[in-house]
Image 1: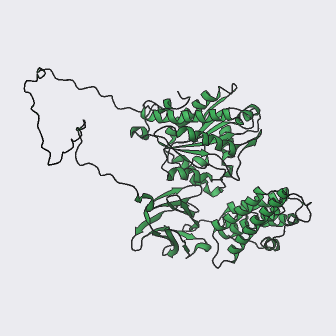
Image 2: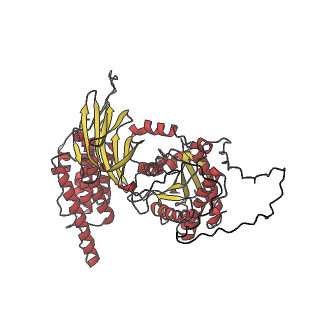
Image 3: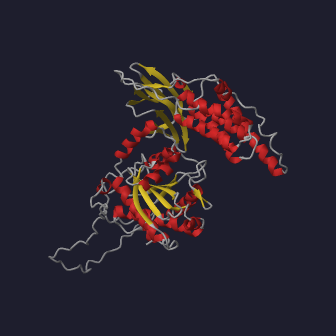
Length: 579
């Protein structure tokens, strides 16, 4: 990819001074609160600027993830202190760095980030002296012209290894290898020293990752080394210390290879109970009598011999009838999914509160979707934790941003049995109202397409990921179970919420290609719990009572679905307000 470096771009890459451009133009505000805010903004800006300078001055080129972290630092300042004189500088620096990241690594996500930040500077801070430089910067951030279609070369082009992330987990370390498409690889583990390597044939790393060694001070994965081998093969070596096994899986949109290493200390305290080598009797043997001291004489009482015994009978005694093993109910299509054929159940539930952090979701009638979904998710967590046999995992329990693809990755890593994503609906039609539940598949009507487009707007994926997305949806083997779970969720919401919302509309169960559901290794659904854009429902969504009703409806659905797999008495009878 060739980039044109103009005078405007050179000006863009010049670090802005620490002194805010708007400080002289704006009227100074008095008061201790304003001074404290100015001081906080100055500290955040100075820290982010120092981190950026460190990246630029480093002997080795910064990685994409390092540059994106600094961009997020600048964005955090703008969100926290939007009226500060440092906010326009922060937007300029963030756009500068995002564009540089795009030029180095070629990811269109970074280019779009730069464009968005520049436009935010232009519209949000029109009196800033930096606005005069925005148009030239936008011109340099424009996508390159489409290349002429040339005949395919005899050999396939090399795939690109774009980035490597190392993330600390509570019980281990995760290494994520970002590639520009699905590739074949060879994996092998070696000892003395302990290491795991991956050979990617037909893959080359970006320039910043060629023949590099990434070192880390903590445990588990101490070093990540990249090297080039014959036949256009890139080898990634992970040097290990103190690990106890690992797992490898792929994620799509974009394609990533994820390697989770488990710390040995996390399992060291586990006590392994040996399996008995003999069959235990059904009736437990009586407890052993205490053995008296050897000096005490043991008296054996005489047993009378004339104790009458029961009369003998030639009739056989009929053993008590044991209940037949529970048989799961069939799926709604009349068949038994593989999960039901194998007698699998549900115990670990992942609750996903939609949006969060810098992605507030839909906003209308005084309701912010990210805040609403988190509140309902925490209520649902509290309800489900009352029931034995149910374990709850949250994708987020605070107002933080979690990428859509990472949410199902959390569920896969935690070995979840069920994934429930909670969202609020919105529409340009203010009369649209009701509840609906989605499962992953291709959309079949315009309404489902519109909802998917809105909920997927934070995915940040490029067009080249489309084939991988289509493949992931087409290969989804949880459709039957996801459809049935969605139907149970929809029924429970309608039944519960109609008590308080007399005009509630049942919009039914639908299917759509939601990014947040792609790649889930378990039945997964997305619940649209009401419309924030509808006046009446928006007012209801602001009340604790309605939110609690939603949480209880979702609790009902989880427990009913759990019951349907095993066809046993529902543990929901121990909860509150559950049939």
